[in-house]
Length: 109
Image (cartoon, rainbow, N blue to C red; front, side, top):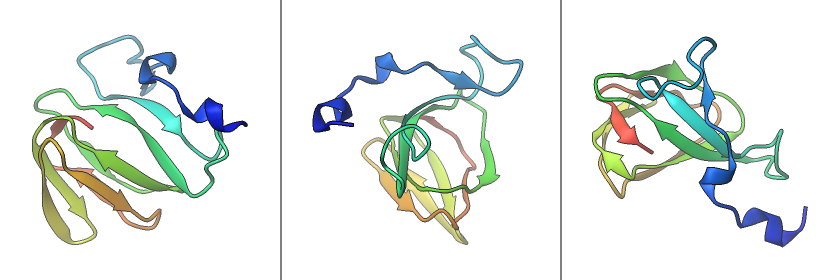
């Protein structure tokens, strides 16, 4: 890939859903922007995640390492054993071996 291919708009990427929830706006959905299986970024993953009010994301981890940046809403991230506030402007980076969960959901990150 050339360097120009890294400049994209998130609207160029389709929303991804859990099976059976395709096309709904009231469920957790995401757009994968950078990932080792899609781009030559083997060591980091980045995307857009939307969590509807009242929802939460189960604890999980996967390779590669991830970066989250909160743009709307507020919540709590559990990184390892530490709870951290997540408000607009918060960013978090964690290794593929760390667990992340949104307990009080953020709206968009």
